[in-house]
Image (cartoon, rainbow, N blue to C red; front, side, top):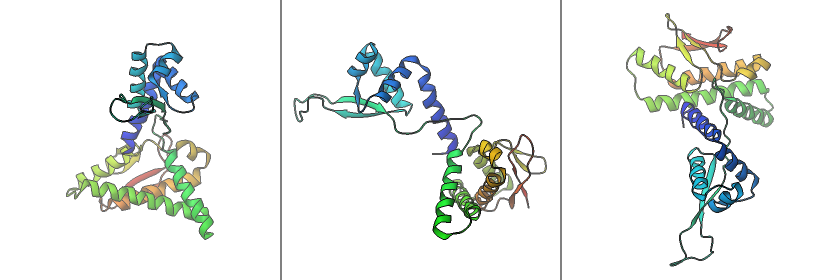
Length: 236
């Protein structure tokens, strides 16, 4: 799933809890150890069964609640009756931020770097640089494969802009073809550990451009400026 689509899905999941009955149902499921039936939810909240069923299914649609089916009588075969729908709180973490933040990606890159440093004895900074560049290269290559051959400079540049936008960078194209990144997906981490995180970000974007293939030889470089990501992209 693309990051932009995932953000929309996460926002929808959180928005589903804005309704008081759904919040109460979600809290109920969080407190219960195991699956809960519609009847149990209805009784616990003193609401009609149909209301409980409606809002539980809305939480399922939002991705914050899971379902299963089970015959409550324990019988099987003909005459056993229809299985009941049971609910429990989902195990998938749901969080969202505006502007877009990718602390999950930063955590994955750092964990990979630490594991590699422990395995090889190499400096963590070197391992982080390598893991960030490799991750960016994979993402860029996947995007290039999905896009197919792009014949014009405008098509190639647009593909790069679209990929950067999908990963939360909010790119803007300047008059001279330089790409400024309005948003930093690692903003809070960069404020606290600027050298480490900005270096990681630079390597990630450099790998992403490499993976995308020829795009008029775009290069990522550090160019810190207030209100922007520390990296800018320009033609070599």
